[in-house]
Every structure is written in C-alpha cells, then in structure tokens.
Length: 155
Image (cartoon, rainbow, N blue to C red; front, top):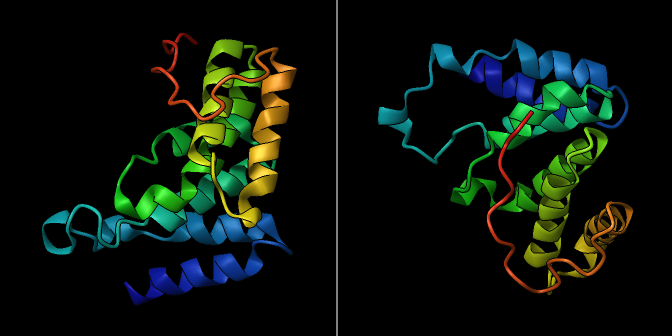
C-alpha cells in the first residue's frame, strides 16, 4: 500500500513536466494486490484521483481512445464529484473527434450545467465546453438545464 501511495504522489509531481513518466508511475501501481472494498468501503480510498489522473494523462499524451473508458469509468460518488466537469469535457472532446456530435453535445452541455454558477477557477472549463457546443453546432444547449440522458452508445 505504501509503495502505491508513493507512486501516486510521484506521478502527481511529474504531471506537468513529464506526463509519460507520470503515466508510467500510475500504471505500475497495483492496488488490486491489497485494496479490499469490504475493508475500505465503496467510496473511501477508491483510487478516484489515480483513475482520473490516468485518464487525463492518456488524454494529454494524445491517446484518446485509451482515455475514453477511464473517463467513462469515473462513476458518480462523493470522491469523484470534483472530477465530473473535466470528465464530461474530455468525453465531449473525444466524441466530437469520433464524429458522434449528439453525444459530444450532451457532455459539453453537462459541463455547462454542472458549472452553471461556478467559481472563477472553473471558468476556463466552462468556456471550453461552450466552445465545444459551438463547434458541434449546439450553441446554447444545456445552459442551466439538466441535460436529458446521453444518446445511445453506438460505436
């Protein structure tokens, strides 16, 4: 456990300067060797930060197809709430790249809904989502409304 926590911390330190090294560190952790949900609980210490970090690093390294399931796998629980806007932004960007504009628009709209009355620090994420909506031709979608369920997952 201490080894994996150390790897996680070192990955965060490498995040800006060396994303590939950070990803290598995250990928070398083996929490499945010691993590037990019956002991730690479903949401306590569930590696949410590390799972998000892996997804974001894959994204930054241009490995968007690999990042997709990692972003999709970040489920809604209390530990993942701070990651939801960026998760939806990245999913919108990936679906836009794939030409699935309805799904992209849904995710971009979700960001705007989540950040409807956000602090100033979140403005760049909200603006990126608004730009995404404009790119996919859905300007104004999701402004302050809860989006309907995302379109079906056809590949």
